[in-house]
Image 1 (cartoon, rainbow, N blue to C red):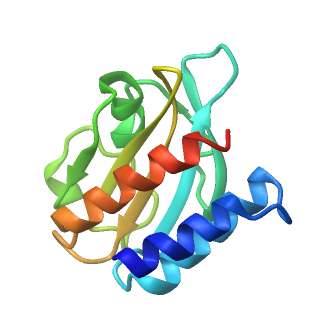
Image 2: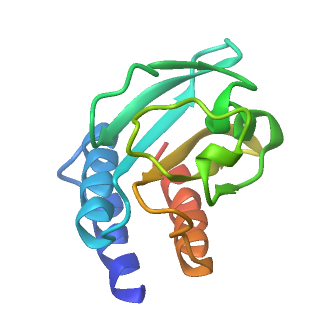
Length: 149
């Protein structure tokens, strides 16, 4: 994981790319390096609205460009301000299906100046794949991402 953190840091610190490009490169790297990350993307607070707007992502296209607060796992994290790991999406009553292949999801909030401004959302085609290391990596990553926003 430390090697992956180094590579993620170098993307975020790169002076050659704008924020959008950096976030897209982060998604690509996570998608390439962690086999059970099958959709990796960012959602951000949509202006003053109580909704999330899709940012850079890697994976199958999604219809969920806008997600109201409270809806689905992403919408719940926007309200709870806490990481949410869903080992089996079929057991979750408030799940918004992006793909019939999705079996599990992890969503980690991004805070800037104490405010929840967005999140990273990762779907997996495997039931219960996410480890404590994945959670720690993604929470670390969200903290690092907040520094460039």
